[in-house]
Image (cartoon, rainbow, N blue to C red; front, side):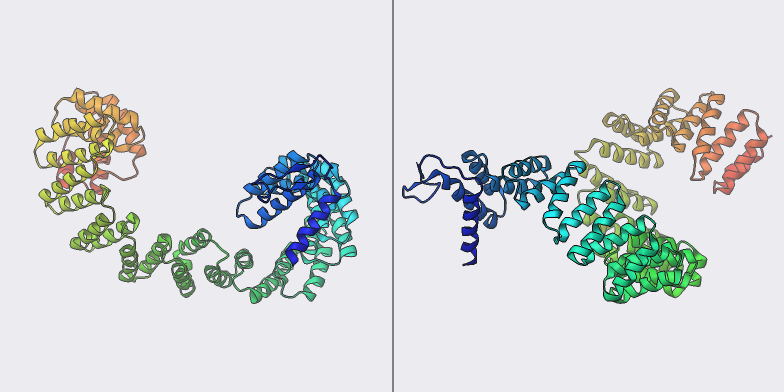
Length: 576
């Protein structure tokens, strides 16, 4: 009954606004009922329009309704209701220019229709045509002085025009004519604060909040005003009032945290941080950043040990599958002396997420330090099972077996890695380079050099292979011209790599180009951040060759301190 009353109302509107008499036509099948009916063409647009309204109500997408309203306009180009509906659909599809034009045409057809004027004013506002929107919104407000939405739009327009005092005047008028609406009142108070009328903003907010004590937004706004006028105790108290209403309110917690931090009240801001961890209003990244900052100071952590422990626990409890939360909690646990507990936390996570390389690295480093290499192998195998199409786990297993002296197993894993990387030339070249490195260290130099060349045939720009092949040739004083070419190529590709520069300098030195070697190795030393003992040794050797014997001995001693073989250093220090 209600539905058909609405439809009949729509028919009445159509008959009174835009249908024009035309010749009679017969309704064809598919357009209207199957039986041929003689109907006046002035009603045809009306019936189609009603079909369009039905389509809007029943269809999940507006395509059919849009098509019907456009057909109405083909029958009657001045059918304002169809223009209005198409304008509203265009707004939904972000076609603001089309919406503005359609609503303008509808208003030209019927300038007395309030809805057409509202549509036109809003589309002008959305499209940024503010000066054109202003007179339209003024007319709308004058015609409907008790509609708060009109005042909201007017205030928004004045705000966009950088006329906050006019916006305040409009909102004052709204309260007198339409009554007090919370959204409009709070917007007015925000405007008052923005223009420096803080006392009036405070007075109005206090009065409003006395009657609406559970309005969280009003509480937050009043707290801000108290902050602006340096009423610190009221600022904090009001934020706490908000949290009694909404204990997990993220904005209130963040403000309280910042307030106590500025005040230097460590106990209170740490407590606020703990509460923040349980708030769904605050994103993980913000929480993680705060916990990282608070746990970075060892003395602070000791002073507030219980609260920091609760903080990291709350974060990992809220985000048990977020690795950064688990890692942070585990590392903090380890720093408190509970190394086993922290490691177990990471292991628990890794068993659920065996594809996580960062967790694997943390676990295997811990196990390796404890000489539990069987455990390292176990976790590498879990990683391999999780990533069967990746060469990385196989390379890790190969490196482990090589470290343990089990070279046949190490070669086996690299061969498997080659099969996995069959369609990736870059990876194949890198794996071949690793095989060649192993062969050279096993004393199988001819095989190693042959494999290096195969790797470079596949990828001529593989810097690691270029560097290692060149360096081993220099150690053997073999084919130094080729070695120099390859080392120079590696440096041209990665000009800030200290290892590649060291190799290039050493090859030049072996070729007798001492001055060039000295220049290059100085670059390498300045760029090195690893404290390489090999690089320091080479620098000392090149300095000695140039006659800088005092400096040479200084860098040899540095190499010794960095862990180089004492026998080699002692031999050099005995040189005249």
